[in-house]
Image (tube, rainbow, N blue to C red; front, side, top):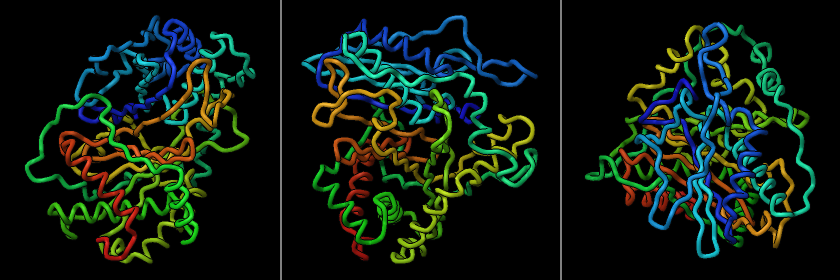
Length: 427
């Protein structure tokens, strides 16, 4: 993720937490600093060290101040790609907004430092320290051992498991794919306030109906949504002028490498990706598409340690930055990113009380969560799915160079329509 970072497609991601209740700013800052002490990669930078390699090192000092925004202020990170330069600054930046009995915390993370699960673990720790400082009696935090980070790759996979030598060079796992089509007359940069989320929510009853529909078809909700995503992309592209000859559709699906029985790692990046690719003909064959997605997702869960991406990473020889250049052309390597997080609060290491099923941290009640994965260049849309309070949230971010606000909303609406209208003539 560090080697693949570039201004036009920064490897950063954002999560936002909305609360009822107004946060005590000074106590939250203290809690934030305490939480950072449990997560060393979030307070490190990258410098040349051992054997002149890029290494995580502790800076002499770093900026951990939460930026507090007024009513008219907006989150701003330098550069169009919202980059965080890990050679100069730590891989987390946070803003807060307070007023009218509500609070919002916006966290930006560099994906080289941690994945979404690591981000949620940090936020949970931050809320735990805040509640403690506010006088709430809590169960003790789970202890974390910093030295476990050194063994993280040995724990999650090994070259022997992958079945080849570490220096065996193999091709990148992705092949050029068909991008999400632009809308005529809507190309070019669009000014947006960060982080430019587009969202849709299935409330409790609608989400229950979705689960029951998936179960009745022998699918998980994730399988059903992946199927709908393939159909939505094909329908959108046909509407906007990309036909069958323009290539297959590829969905990049992040996969967690953590397993029960492993150490409780501090915030770290422990994900790989599965790449589900389908031709137009395969998408049009709805029954076969449904079955193939179910079978491939099951296979990926059991073979994620041996994924093509893991083989590529272990097979890199020479400079990792040179290897990353293979991903930096003008080709679309994944049509969309599709990440299913589940309930982020169940990823907390901290045990916090609930009120009416909602997480509480002293005077703060967690009402809503949003977030989205990074966007690589020409991967023009990234989707993250969350469940909280028995609701399903679909959160999307798009590349403003290719999709305007209006086109982005229309693309999300198109996806939801394909979920809600599963009839064979949806194409």
